[in-house]
Length: 224
Length: 224
DNA sequence: CAGTATCCATTTCGATACTG
DNA sequence: CAGTATCGAAATGGATACTG
Picture 1 (cartoon, rainbow over the protein chains, first blue to last red):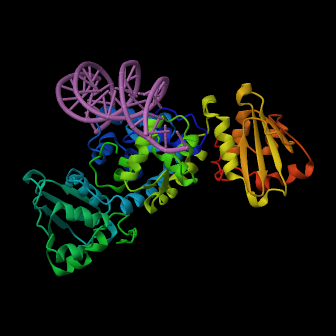
Picture 2 (picture 1 turned 90 degrees about the horizontal axis):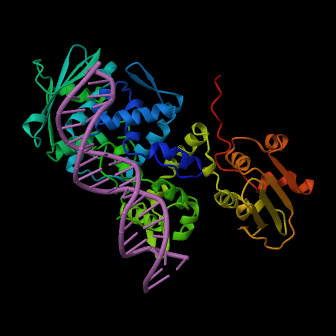
């Protein structure tokens, strides 16, 4: 665990565990349903495996995570960190607007999008959404989202299915839409995003292609 | 600020600022009303002045704190960290029970007690409460709480007034009472705490000598 | 009171390669 | 897939003394 603050204050005691680098991001991943080591790594790609291993073991020792064979599962104490993570997300979305170019990871974005697909609202049959980030180097530019009522998959190589909808976008603007910082319509109108495909699909898309849980958090009024 | 996580996730962006050692404790102090440098230091006594200065400046740069002459004041963004701090406190009080001996600082305790005195409920005239921590070295054993309807003061030397109520306690048990981990009555019954003084004062004490805001948070059921 | 200055021990973390 | 092993660069932060 982190160094002690030598205070009996519950905030201090909580932070002794939680203020170490990466810890709350790992918990965020576990809260979103990741269970396996490399699954967590996908959501926190820049942590080294050594450090992830160390952090997970710390969390196990702290009683926040339970290790069952190859699965890491939150204990009740871990589940109760959800209000903390949510409060941080709400604050972050309201008050930390500036994203650096390095913050814009298309793979993370696609994973997040996938995770929030509403499978119950997906059209019958197979729907394939191709995301094309025009300002991203070729290697990470194209992403295929393959949706069926049974589940959603992300590919970074063409899976070969017919594409139903194509989204051509600046990566930054797509991230901003995801976060709820700007609206689809405004990005389209500004020419930062273009959506191609049958009108019917484009219209129903917001029902199954949901944005971040925090996209609808109201933003502070701009006091000029 | 701390190192970037290179993620657009609001939790990650929030933690880039907030996961550095001491930062959230400083914010906790500012949220409780401290404004001056050495006032914050009293609540976070083990931080070095250099580091406190650095952290405060980081918070100013992040737009969380406003510096006005010698006062540090939370901005709206800073005020909105209250839900984060509260969520951490609730979690801490429920899930981080074990306190080390080094966590038991009588000065911090007395400051906290003082801060939570309900001045509107204090008896008319002057009420002096002497706390005597029998297991604490002489230098930090005795604390006088001087209450008047106008305010509350803490002294670690005898201010010379007549003592109205004396609380003789193990420091650990007094801290546990403060945190809401145990109840006054149980501690008294167990002999860990003794309260001397007129019945009338002892009965009304809980009205003006309030416990931690988080003392009433329900604790997890003991699953045996 | 409100900080700065200095200095170094220690930790921490990232990168990378490797193993069962 | 699920981690360990190793290593060195960087920074973090604790202690202390000092200043306007």
